[in-house]
Length: 373
Image 1: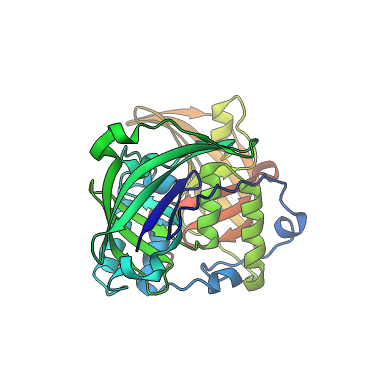
Image 2 (image 1 turned 90 degrees about the vertical axis):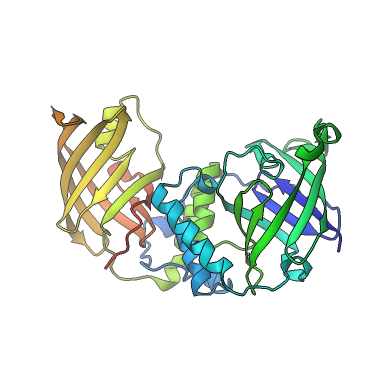
């Protein structure tokens, strides 16, 4: 079976019998719908919306999916603990019996989105295809042949720019013939799910790839945040999808939470941003304490501690009043106080969407890897 690789800025890889190229789709951000953000009661569990019920993942596959949630940049921002969780989940799946000869299965055909790689900054050909900005994309096409039941051999042969404002593609001058072996490679499929929705591959340069045909809503939200495209739309869609399984009450889950997006740009004063929770991470403890932490440079950090008290089923009154700039064993107190009415719009053990200071919408991802008891 002859295959063709197609890759573009939306981090997708297409395997198909035909050489037809595809162009990425872009969407413009819009304001959050009032009905879905201001009056919503949302759930505290994950993988539960209607669209998600159509995506088939077994227990071991869900472990990998959950390990990937909260990791930005296909692995670029992953902590050692997150990398370890993903690595363990990958090994478990590679030890299971998926599709026996994946390259000969029709399930491998289609459009695959790269979710994670162990070398997000790699210069290998398959990674160089994922280049672009918000108004154009660069994609490459590779001829591929099957060597055996698991391995695909490929060689990139052409590339082009796809501009949003042009109805045609502009050839991209990559000298593939001069690159020789640099334009060639192989890809082993070490796991292909029986549902055809999840694939694990290892490349000729030792890189591990995790790809999906279908993504669950949290992943689509985090992907939008990473690319900076359609974030408000993604948040609105995510909250609306989870309204059908709403809970009457949500809890502020303890752990370390990194702020990955807010609906307001930072102000000129970094210390005001830090004191209002507009940057850095939050540490929530079970005894009702909350801490803002922002790393400044070379071991110096801003720290601000306060308390939170539940005022309604999904709302907390937060008072932050103990701030300092800390370096090693020394600390310089900072006189400032921040009062916040914090409303939880969505919360599970991996991601949290809330409305905080001056009604700013925040998205936080959990980074400590622990689970709520």
